[in-house]
Image (cartoon, rainbow, N blue to C red; front, top):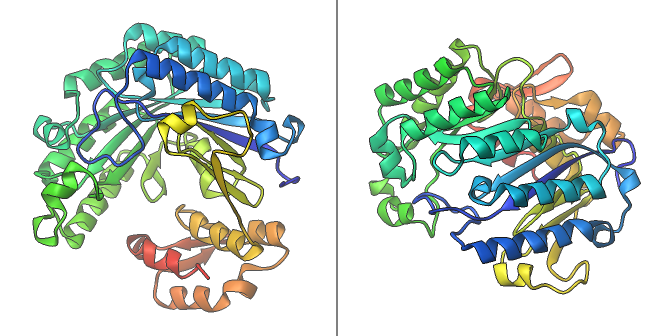
Length: 387
């Protein structure tokens, strides 16, 4: 266990969707009410058994963030969300419950004004909603179930319900997307003034309908250079509108970084509850089963449905570097030395010098951070810190 820093993040996976989008390879599925009820029952059971399961006690941790993701959490009854949060409050101690960042993902078309008000009453203070595109033909191409009007109704209703921290998801490299249509989407979103924007390039994954359509090189809607141009355009337009790119795909107004996701990139402890969820506790990564029936019908044994990977000290140092370099501020040299008792140059001196000479890394203010070019070639840089 990491005794020096007891802050904890909690991720809760809700794997249900009204309809799986054509590009999606996330662990999600449609389901009936009985399946949703059975799942939430199993989820609560997992939370209640977590201390035995992970071999630790609640006094070691203070919850600072909770993230309810999916799937589409807004497609289950808010009473289930209330039960889940109530169980977390019972089993865990918060650093400060009123200041805990509690996020829920919602999709336009699956959430009502009343649900949004209930979420706020439950203490949920951050909303993440998926727009992807403000252009109807692009939404149709993605297989989304909502329209632009659905999104706008959801956004305004969230403001009316009292949400003052909203993230909007956008996507680039959508089939049929142009620079003009992307500029239209970004302009519409920035005019709304959300506190946070996540902008991801479409990845065509095996096993999805998109892979059947665009899986070969000649069928792909954009080549690498075109995708990069759309990304650069996204960064420029968002920064011009007052959003800081603090991570490769994440942008925020001042003071609104996602605290939960930042914990992932800085290797803080977190529990993941639910189907296929992952956890990091100390130097061990855990992952739950991805099989729905096994999860819902599992016996009470604390470890029968998990796999775990014990990370060596070298593994932890590698993760500290390549996860930290996803962030624009980069890796804190003092933080690395505090965590591992050695300077990063003593371990990665050759790699650091190499990437500096190639114009991919820079050193400033005690941080090793990626240059703009280093961000473009992020996978190449990250791989350099894997031993």
